[in-house]
Amino acid sequence: MANWLVTVDFDDFELDKAFEALPVIYWKNSTTNKDKGLQLNDIVYVYVTKPISKVMYQFKVIGHAEKSEYPLAQKVFWKDTTQLDSIKGYAIFEKLNKVDKSTLSFEYFRQENLIPDAPIQGRRTDRDKASNDPIRIFLTHIFNEFKTENVNSDYPDEANLENSLFPEGAKKTVQVNRYERNPEARAKCIEIHGTRCKICEMSFAETYGTFAKDFIHVHHITSLSEISDSYEVNPETDLLPVCPNCHAMLHRQENGIPMKVDRLKLLFEVSKNSK
Image (cartoon, rainbow, N blue to C red):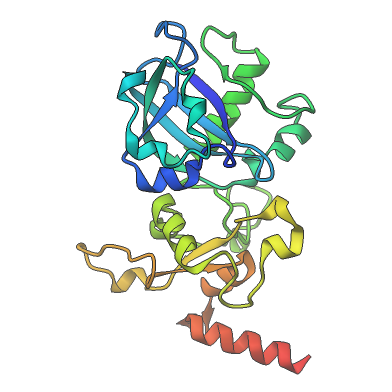
């Protein structure tokens, strides 16, 4: 098994929409020789080009297909289907994960010297690469970031639990439940509600520019104590886009009472108006 990095331009192929709509994704294989291209069980990470400039998708190769087998349902996500004419064959991707993390951004890669100071282009794989090879080191970083997504994502923490320098009493963290982390539920929530914070109305794109486009946290409104075993999250009614500050406040208590969305909105408005 090997790890791969490939790129996508949403102006060419709307992978964001295809990821939500399709059960599997057909991806151009780099060669008709399956021993040299994408192989079964390989893990593929997809880097989204400017203005997003992040690795956001993780797939697993579960099969191969000929040119004639390319699904009609996937063609609708291409801006120009003539680009398909020269493709000889495809690898079939199983969807594993979709994340949005600053540690998977081009800017982070550049700052940490994981890649040269140039756009990410083409394909990269760690197959047959030595442990100290720059490509293997780069892909290992991406692998680890997706591996730890369930623990360390771009969610608000009040203290680093792994830092032994903190006294025991300082070890606090905001517990973010699995419904807020679920990539498909998050994506659907954002599709319905947008990316503006529903508490303070802050927009990351307006505040920081296109670098921060589409960044937002998602809060699960219902307390886990109120959820039964048969519960299924409804992205429209159960999830809410909020900025990290408001998200952290929603996970706090007021006089021992869990914070509610309407209550935090009121506190924010009162504080804002008092100024």
